[in-house]
Image 1 (spheres, rainbow, N blue to C red):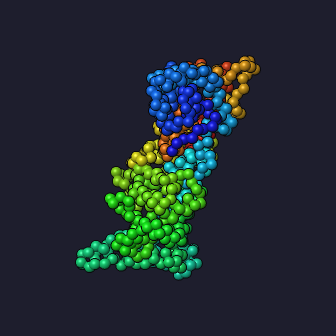
Image 2 (cartoon, rainbow, N blue to C red):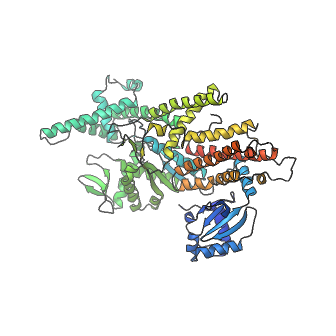
Image 3 (cartoon, protein in one colour):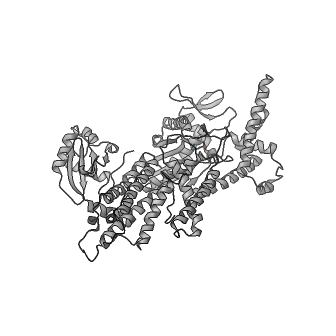
Length: 618
Ligand code: ARG
């Protein structure tokens, strides 16, 4: 998705630099080129400059050689408030920033709360993001966390760049499995509730529901084997009974509905506990069941457009490509399917929100499903179908095997969270013992919760979305190395430095009375400080890229890099007293504290976007 021009908010942003280059090139500003291809990076060596702008895409659009373009830009360049120098370097133009101006910008933008992330890209636009969307009556297994935390981070990222975000939990609360569950409950559950009142009072857990479902699958399998052995054609009785129960459910039968509602309530209550622990929320929770009433109209519409066909008594949308299987919309027995409800839900989302984009954060196993659904919508003549995209992610393997409720190999999400909490308490207490009094006993609980959740969330957001991940307790609960808690520690360290300096952040320092004309930015002269400021300013473009590529891990990596740059400065101060943040010169000290405060701000903001808390002390 092209990234529109940002406001003049950040004079060092990619858009600002792009505008400078466009202005100086003297070429027709109306010519468009892919702005995503417009690269801004740090030059390979710092003495070459601060921002290297690649001119290939612009040169292609202007039908010029990039080197010529670079030379022209360099010739026309005049030093200004923010940029001091521009030099052509082959196909690149290297700008040198006015360092004091950049320091000032970083400190003021972070302190004023305006921040370093422009909201221009998404202002006035709506994006729907379907995430988490688990199936009721089944365990929330650890792999469900992928959709949940990736989707929620994307929601935060899009919000940060200005979009109105509608986070949607499309609960899987309909389909033939619910017929199986009702059938299993009626067959095996003891004691059966005698009436609605008793059903209401019945205490039931997802674990029990899951168990009933698994039993039913096994029993049907066993019956099928038995029939096969005896050479009898036909369906296992439990399977046809389940189908009947689902039929009743679709027809609105009171008993079927009552049981289904109970299972749904039990499931939702448990899901909510996990969402609360993870700090995850949705703008809309709508089960698949809510789209039932739209299904006949959707089928009529597709019929009128000549898109439906019959296959073995079932209703399908044949794919345009003969090698792709058709999208199944109604089974022989009249039951509707997952895809049918997704068509109805997509139309509802369009009619309700007129989205700019509509994303589905769902595992890669559903690639085919989504391409069929979007293809059917496009062929039905809906232009907005091209605004819909599947945002797939890789699988979680446990012990080398794909997890899933059928293979039986599941790690439960709530178990992971509980274990994470247990380990985090140990880490926080250990740390408290080491550093002494800073962490109050009462805070251990609260902080360890933040650490636990931070570890688990970060473990899921630190590698590329589409990569498969191997579940390991060590990686998921890691609090050291490339982990969420490592970033939380860096943040708490910033807070602690400011506290020690008696500044819980009173704002950027003013020039001290000793040197009234001094710009605090101009006092920061070390390369460590400069590297830090240069890194801080990148958050704006990182967040834009992470949102537009649907890759939260870009932000995770950035935060780790930022911690490394901060820690290099901090460590240098331990070795060389002249570099210490809390140095003797009051003006320099104030300027350095400003930089620490800006770092704290950016770390907290970045963690917040990933869905991770940033405690002030740890
Ligand atoms: N409930 C589905 C599952 O667990 C995921 C639903 C994703 N969203 C959608 N609109 N299909 O596989």
